[in-house]
Image (cartoon, rainbow, N blue to C red; front, side, top):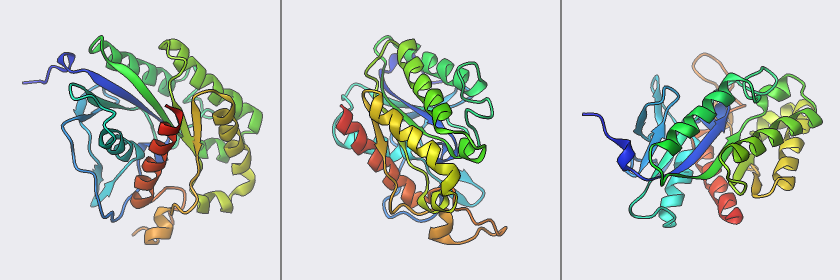
Length: 252
């Protein structure tokens, strides 16, 4: 029998952006996330499933929202009669510059429909956080500061306006430092734009990523020789989720 989610009351977390939000970190962690009956995913096919790390091939892949959720529950922010619903809207390799996240683009529109679906499940459902990690694609496409600032600030404001929640906390973060330093010229305008949005748009925070290793730094080249320095390792993703949560507490 299908579970009737209309009987559940959810705190809703939006998870948007590209691959470092979607989750590509792999490797060992000392305290892995275990599925919790209080934490659920709304997937892009609009199904709802228990929140858990993905298995791709022979690797467990994690994302920042799971550690965020664990901290949220651990700090007793989730009322006893409520559950968490994470909207899994992030898609790897996407940006504003390739027409995926603009206000008329497919991923933005899909995210809006996912949020509406989540809210409409129960009239006591509420948005609590908007977690965002994106910009590598736009850096690679040579986007300048002004363009990225306008795109991102418009996205944040439009989501808040659409759901009449002007104080919805928005958190975004820096890139993997290894990849950023190796591509500093193209990364600087994007990171500075993200930082400016988080500084100038109210109820927002920017998360630093110093000390967080890439998959390549942590584990070396993949079996196919790919030196994955653009993605946070699984251990780094856990720490990133922790930092996002700390930033969230600083807002609320």
